[in-house]
Structure formats: C-alpha cells, structure tokens
Image (cartoon, rainbow, N blue to C red; front, side, top):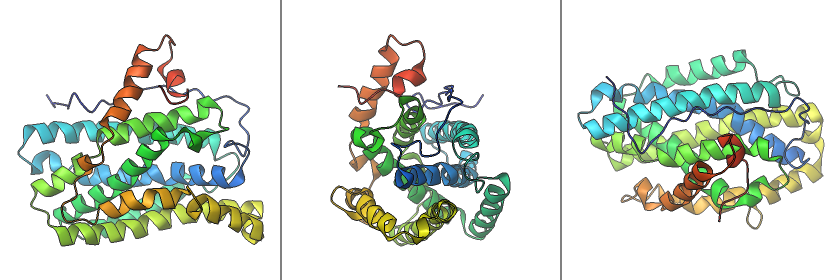
Length: 287
C-alpha cells in the first residue's frame, strides 16, 4: 500500500460556482481578472509537468518519509488540476475561448518533450523551481487579503485552498533534487529556464484576453498594469525578494517561514461552524 505524508493532505473539496458569473469577476477589473485567469489557465500545465517529473521519484529515492511526501504532493496536484479544469470551464471559457483542451495539450506536449531530453536531476531541478514560484505567490495571497479585495468570496475560495496546499508541499521537490545530489549550478540554470517558461505560459493568455477586449491598444491599460505589477506594493515588486532568495547557494524553501500562516488557516476552517469547508475558506483572513 502506498504511504502518504500526514503533513501534506490531499483535500477533495467541492467548489460550487454560481451560474451568473460576470466577465470581470475580480472586483470588476479587467486587469486583475486577466491576471488570475492567466494563472488558472497555465497552473494546471505547470502542475502536470511537476507531477510528470516527481512520479519518477517514487522509485528513484530511498527515504520513506520523502517518498510519502512525494505521493502526497502528486495526489494534491492531481486534485488541483481537476478542480481548476472545472473552474476554468465556468469562469473563463464562456468569455475567452483561449482556454481549450487543444491549447493545453499542445503546450503540455511541447514542454514535456523538451524536458524529457534532460536528465532526471534536471527534471527535479525544474520542479523545484516551479514549486518556488507557486509557494511564494501562495504565501502572499494568504498573508495579504487585499489581493482578493472586491472579489465574491466563493470565487476566492479555490485560490485559498490551492495556496494552503502549495505551502504544505513547498519543500518536497527541492528535497528530492537535493536527495539525488543536485548541485547549485543546475538548480540556478533550471530556475532561469522555469522563469522563461513561467513567463511564456502567463503572457500568452494575458495577451489573448487583452486583444479580445481591445485593451492591447489602450495606453491607460498599460499604465495600470505597470502599477499593478511594479508600482508601490505591486505584485512583482513584492515577490521579487522572495524570488531572488532562490539564487542563494544556501537557500532552502523552509527558510521562508509560513507554517504558522497555514496552520492558522487550517485551524480556522477546520473549527468553523460552517458546514461547507469551501465556504469557510472563502472568508477573509482569520485572526
């Protein structure tokens, strides 16, 4: 029987979205809606790549604790992909047909084909880099409720659930890479490559949505976008320090202390009087 880590739980939550979903569901902002739509489109692709890589680690590492953590991570990511597929079909596809099986399959096949040309160690290095992106973003979105300000609670629930689980398994891919003797230079090369892949997967749907709405020709939209990403408290500006930490030779994901953050969240929705855990997750940050 396959063992699982008790600290990394694959939660099968059910998120029921309303039928009257608006196009700009994030605070009636096209820019913010584009941002989270783009994440929702490419995250399942990224997670499929991580799963493809780490499945190899089930038989490639000898530590039973790390094997159990890998099993739990793969289970979590499989559920994430399934839930985001349902989410995207209701939240994005009716308004932006870019989100299609053809797009996902084409991108996935190309990236998987490229990655399969490299060694297992480089597979694991790419997975560790990808998980760093999701972990630092998850920390920010759970720690600062302003990123979901003006959003219907039921819409933000799936994001908070995803953030909790990304933080839970943030060290697994990194530990697999180190267990296989992965060194600093390969880790940094993989982060450069993953940064490029991450950007490409993100920009493609962003540009398509902008073009469909005619925002790609509006200078005012670009000014708002710059402010959102690089202005004071902008997304990229806030995440930059955490991202750069990965380039330190001594870096390990556990150095980013956020276990107390997700423990508070998990304790909150576990003890909530609400019968639907997803509804509890939709509420604002717990005290």
